[in-house]
Image (tube, rainbow, N blue to C red; front, side, top):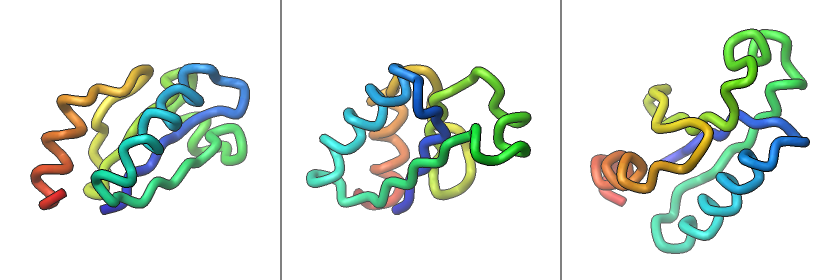
Length: 81
């Protein structure tokens, strides 16, 4: 399973979400992609200040600003993880 975090380099909430996800990777085995919205005008327009945003493999938002462990667990359970 692939999870994507849309973030910004200077965003402390983004760093916190990525760190929490990285801590869960060994247990759940998902691939984590981190995309900086400031490197792409379309992403910056799409997400604005609503970062970090965690997106599942299906393209649906799992959570934003803070990691919602319960919502993530639902997604991971649905993927067999």
